[in-house]
Image (cartoon, rainbow, N blue to C red; front, side, top):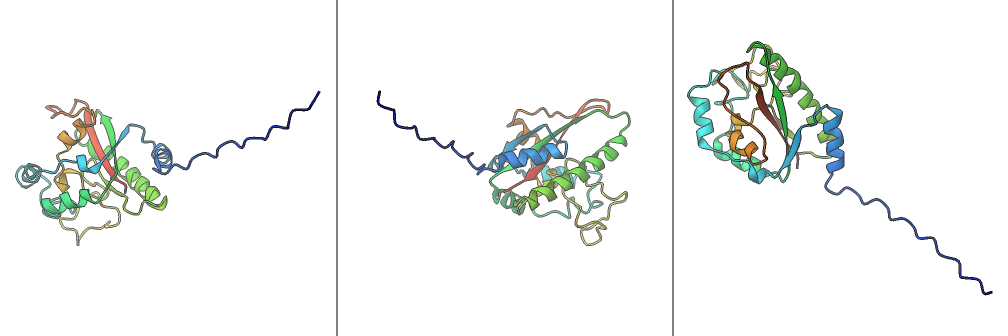
Length: 197
């Protein structure tokens, strides 16, 4: 009986590189304990003048926080800034607090971890990585009233609304919950934004 020719071993295809970098980004998010997030095309970020007006009139932190208006760029510059990015991640944080002041301690802790994440994303090659905190910076116990007087300029970051982002409309596009609360005992839904590349 004639022998069959030996079959060539077919090399298994090499794993395709993750050109989008999603696996690496997701691993970094997980490393820092962030599991509730969604990716967003920054073109979907809504920037609105009314958000800045709410900062100017009615916000107790106006003029008292180095990362908030009037220490923030004009609305048009904020819109241009977001357009420089192709990808962002939105992190959702749900929390109920016993006392209103507990929100600030929680926010500070989360903000510090978000800064570590921003640093790791930068080191992974995403040189434009920039985090927007979900709450006032809170890194220092007492905030300086201007950027030049800021005690932690390397650590301080603005909130999305300080950059005139309509967080309500933007996160609802992703199917996330967000409502105006009438009582501090209600669950808060807060959102941080990582601008990636």
